[in-house]
Length: 104
Image (cartoon, rainbow, N blue to C red; front, top):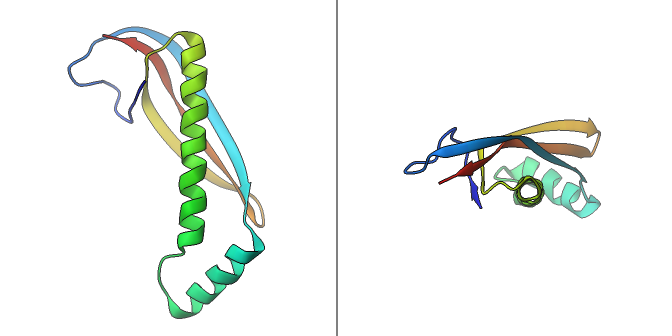
């Protein structure tokens, strides 16, 4: 399945728009990651533990969006966007949404 942030797919024509597909996940930090993040906060640098957590979360959201699009009969999702919001101290929601389409 083609999944893109653009509204069109180069070299293809969108034949039918099937509707919105969306998916989300809520993830909580682990205590071990918090300790490592605190240490990185002292010495500086990327907090890889959180970056990896968010990357895995986005991949889960993309997979769920793909499954929902397939259930509608789509072969592509265009206009994909992500949003992240804090749910509570220590947990965040990753939301993804896009438009399921049939393209040729």
